[in-house]
Image: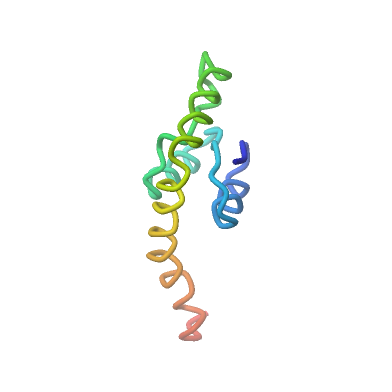
Length: 92
């Protein structure tokens, strides 16, 4: 697993099949996690117990790695066609 501060690092990690702890520094990180049904994998950077929260997420990911990646793959299968369609149809 990875622990990522940057938004795109979270996407890259998941696309590579590696679950991640996303450090929520802006709304977009929380929005991404919500759209992927992976809210349990986010830790707010303004947490008063950052270290403990990260360790809890690591434990959660270790116990649920398969189901986390299943969720991601399901969402990926939904979103990829939407993202590629404009290019396939030469709309862009």
